[in-house]
Length: 166
Image (cartoon, rainbow, N blue to C red):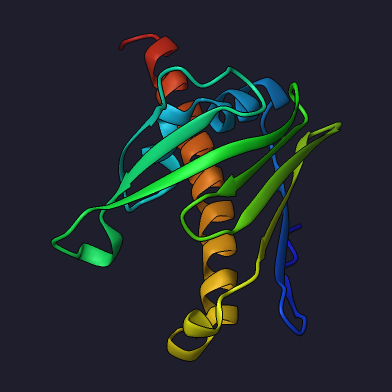
């Protein structure tokens, strides 16, 4: 069962979302770890790629090409992987906004439990012009729901591919 909650501190905002995914951990990990699959998770992402010359694993930098909310302009987001435990944990920092995120996977008998945490320290200007708490909460919930949909779609496509024809 998923349970969202947000905690607003004096300067740091944290939003957490947990959900059960009835999928093998390997399938979930492969979706999350492959940067080029970001458009399957993030509706505004048109393309994502690893920056050439950055290390594989911690320190890897990736660029996400986004078109936010139907805008005419593109927005580039540079992200750096800050922690990785193979098959269990990914943590990264958005070098554009300063938001830090992590996903931890825990095995369950009937799939995987995913814990997503986003932490952000908005600048005074961001606090003045944005509803920061709502923006952070929406980002977290959207990502969790999109991960679930991408995995369900992948599973449905795989089942269709192996189903016998009439």
